[in-house]
Image (tube, rainbow, N blue to C red; front, side, top):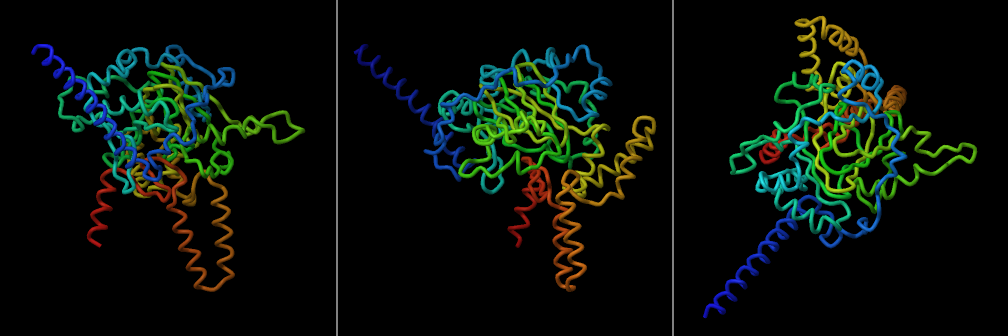
Amino acid sequence: MTTNASRIERKKKKKYKQSKSKRYEDKIKKVKVKVRSEIDLFDWQKWKFHCKDYWIDSTLDKVPRIDYRKVSIDEFIQNYESKNIPVVITHATDDWRAQAHWSEEYFLKYYKSHLFKVGDDDDDNNVYMKMKHFIYYSQHEGLKDDSPLYIFDSGFYRTSRTKKKLDNHLLQDYKVPNYFSEDLFKLTGSRRPPYRWLVIGGSRSGTGIHKDPLGTSAWNALIRGHKRWCLFPPNTPKLLYDPPMKPYDHEGVSWFDQVYPKFKKQDDPNDPRTLGEKLGMVEVLQQPGETIFVPGGWAHVVINLDFTIAVTQNFCSTTNLEYVYLSTRHSRPKLGEKLYRKIQELGKREPKLYGNAAASLQMLRTVPQLPPDSSSDSSASSSSSSSSSSSSSSSACISNNQQKRKRIISSTESETDLSDGTCMCKKCKTKRKKNTRLV
């Protein structure tokens, strides 16, 4: 009897383990369908990218390294931020709790039932995944998926995402490096765009080629794993670094597989340099504990080479304020106007610190409201206006309407700023849905 009872008990345990993994897999399938409905569940491993090696030769990484403990804020601004030059910073995370604790085991222990954002569905609703399901996925299906699911979450600190009371807050696990402590966008209050993200993903996950929103600069501190970066200077033609990639998607791994090789080739027999060298392309192999500074206007693409955990923030300082203001005024006019107004108030209260910044924005008011980094748009606009002057009044109206639309089209791409300047924060998405129902 005892033997039979133990057998039944073992069968129950075995059945429970199988049902648990099955439940996890069902959850993962539902998330996959929501996040990327255009891909059949059987096509997530279509290109067999997991069979290829995307590690970079460390000799190709020529980006300068600076020691956070030895380089002052003024030196950083003078040598890198003001010159709009990427740089990798070492030892900036040495005293972070995150550096000591953040790992798969840590998140499973303290945040296993906490929801984290892994993407958007077809209706622009956020799609969340419990940490325990995400880590299970990363250790199983994610090892072979072409471009695995990726946590890129701006609300990672919200306690409303879990029923469990947490003694520790993720925001307390790190602190903004002194180089990036100036945060002028906070002046805009609750309407500021999302600006900080927790980033977790396995090998081959990452972000496609893009520029950071609203002209902001960014820093990315890597806690675990390795990241591979490619960056292009602001004047690089978009068609070169972001060409059509059909039938491939716009993910980082697809870019490195299909687009990157052309930048390593010589396109001129009389010039020994590769196309990437002529364009000023920068390659980086980011190591654990390193923080990379990405200047505003630099297009960049990132791929994780193994399981990585990082935190990243976008920022606006007095150094990049002019570019951020022009970009914001173009993409988000109301937000740009509020930023301008707050800087003027700050300039009056603290003229020694912000008087020059306020004066520079006043001068920019006379600059035409066109994409700040697109000369082609500017020339197209001027040519269309000249042609409209010689056409009929009806065609002139059409041309004027086209110009008005062009002024609100964003030249930046992000999870919070669509190509037409539409804000993608939760509040704005909810408001648009309510208006749609009323119509």
